[in-house]
Image 1 (cartoon, helix red, strand yellow):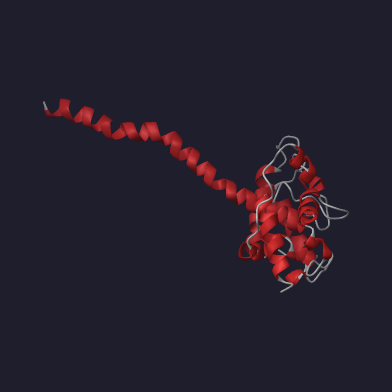
Image 2 (cartoon, rainbow, N blue to C red; image 1 turned 120 degrees about the vertical axis):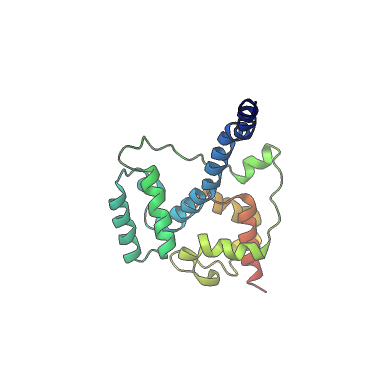
Length: 202
């Protein structure tokens, strides 16, 4: 009698594991996405200073070659600490190895004017406190500490800051040697960076 009773009870304990197992696996994959986003930001902020992103993503290299490539970038002056270099190398080796398929082009960022014509929501207001960290992670290598300039132009007290729409469009779509950031930075993040740069004038 006890054996007959224990078997169904055992299945009752196992049933949630069977039903929820795929959900847990899916959750684990979802948690990896922010890491990929961090790597994509590094790729845009650090690598595109010297190379177009497309040129980098066309490569198909084994992990040791990616490690050597990232090390060479750092030696030549790329602003990557040890943790960032490891993250970037892991991302490149995972998705752009020798057996990877063709590159899928990123969608172009929509223009500000196109957004207005389609009745899109107006640009969000920026929060300077968030913009400081976003600037350091994405903009500093080209535009210098506190927007002082470097490879890219000086942004502190730059007249473009008085034209929020133009600033947003330039960041999203790129201009001249500056690559487009619309696929990396969300509109809210661009607004936060803009707010922080404006606060530097105070």
